Length: 144
Image 1 (cartoon, rainbow, N blue to C red):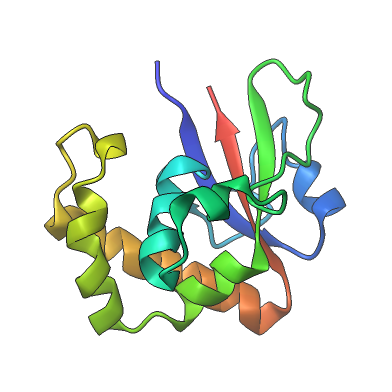
Image 2: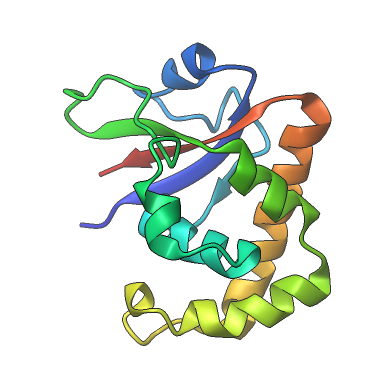
C-alpha cells in the first residue's frame, strides 16, 4: 500500500487541516496528485533554487505537519511559501532543465521518467500559480 499525496490550496492552516478526514478533492479545487512532500519536493526545491538539499529539509518551515499527529491514516503538511513561489515562477525551460536530474534522484528508485514527470511538474506549477493568485498557501494531504 502506498501513500497518496494530493496538493491543494487553502486560505490558512486551519482550513487546510480540516480536510484531513475526507481529503481536499471536494472542497479545494483544483487539486493535484503528485510526489511526496518532504524528500521528493525537497530535491525539486534544491534543483529549482540552487540551495543545498540538507538546508532546505532541515528548515523548520519545510513541510510542517499542521493536522493532528495522531490521525490514523492521513495528515496535512503546509508547503513553504519559498517552494510555492519557486515553483510558480519556474518557466517551461527551467522545468525542462531540472526534470532530468530530479528524475534520477534515489527517491524515484531508478524509475523516474522525465517525459512523464514534466507534465506533472507543469500541473504542479499551475497549482502554485493559483495559490499565488488567490493569496493562499499550498498544502499536501497525505493518506495511506
